[in-house]
Length: 216
Image (tube, rainbow, N blue to C red):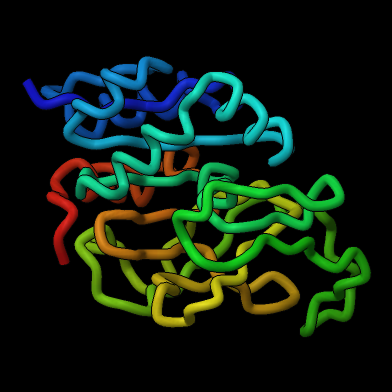
């Protein structure tokens, strides 16, 4: 039976992610694990994350997971970063006075300006960006199969990624400013939103991920 490993470093909504993956493919074995050997052998790997990036990176490094995450990316295994998991894949985050991240994807993580206003109503925008918002795929990709342009996904974040290579942008969103909400590079895909909280569209994305072999 093919397995999907959900990396457990104590900082993700692991139960929700694993249940959503089970719903996306009931025949798939879902392993919530911090065991590098299980992660390296899995057919698919998910890097979830919530909370502060410094704490996330500290736990990833304390548990010795950084090398196997790089191994997964390098060996071609489909790898999905979710929310702070996406931010952890970048080179650097401005959060917590600056944090060195995994460097799987080129670019940095920046904070939303707390003085942002809605461009239509001129009302102040609340930070964090929390709730449903539309996404706009920028590339054709297997993970967008069955997901409409303008589909709504659930967000909770105060920081956003800014890739240094625009060709990696897989989808954009708007919250006061346009920002990147999905990145794609080879067998690595990352999203700022929470598929596990995004009802049908989120399950569709997880289904697409589990059906994906990492190629384009």
